[in-house]
Length: 444
Ligand SMILES: [Fe+2]
Ligand SMILES: [Fe+2]
Image (cartoon, rainbow, N blue to C red):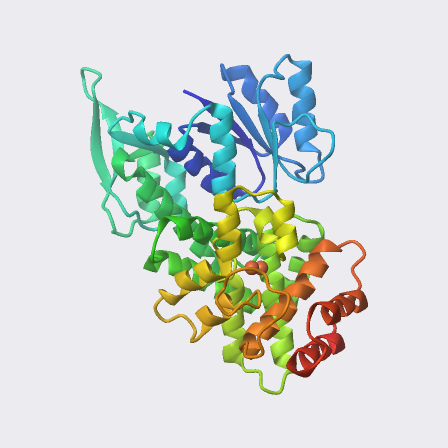
């Protein structure tokens, strides 16, 4: 059995990561919250095959402490994936963003474990698949039957159903399973990926009840990553995925209107604890929300539409570096392979196509998404814009350009310089000029 030592702070991420690692790479996670606890694992576990560690926990340099420990104990051969800021000199096998999306994490893990997606799909798995009982505490129902395992008198394992599919269960039910000494329950192996998706989605939807802004931001990021991953697997997006997207959109709108939550978000932004794509979408919602509020033709409906558009506009771009691309020059500088280049060039069109198939999407949102780089057909990054772009698409473009400047110049951000940049990027007349003037007068 291969083990992954997972040292991260957030209990929700611990669960989502460990379940996905088990299901997609067959790694059993040992979860610890501090480097001290993590070090003691080596006293009683024969082998640790991989370590995933958060850079800092509670002000302690947890990742560095782990590296020093491994070096001092002749264990430097164990690959360590660090979730934190990029650094020039390091001993980590991989550095990924702090709240890395699941597919990037799984890809990195699969590489270190020497497995490919095809290996995983074709690997023999026993008929029943174990999951920790504690996972049930995060959900109120399961989309598949759940079993417990007992050995009969000959030592042969038997499986007994303890939870029905689609039927609500209570904490008491979980307690009963635990009381009978079971630390794991089982689901049928062929349903494990379906269960993983269901579980991830249920945990994300808890964002509605979550009051703590730190947890809220973490869950919103998970929501975006979830829809991003689904957008390449599902066509059209399923009702369940659209529910996750809508929840994100509503919660973001609430957050933008709530000064306390917003203050936390801005702090989080400067400390760089969430990924670029996520920050970029959240900030565009915030800036465009304020712009619409300041315009005489702005309505609440349009604010909601803009939040929807911010969420979906780059949804097909699966890598952070691709989300940063804003011009043909920036795209060429990345030396992308043909397939990636095509996706980047067509991303506005592709996202618009996905949105056009979502029932009850805000009217015209697909058209604005198609136009979000200023091309009517949603292809490429033109420098001159047609005169008949939708006004909301123009608000979006101005807000996005402003946000790009913000994220590029976090440390010495200047509103004045950002506005100057906007006057350079857009025509200095008509609606464009009036929109920039609106933003110029605002306190961001
Ligand atoms: Fe974008
Ligand atoms: Fe874009």
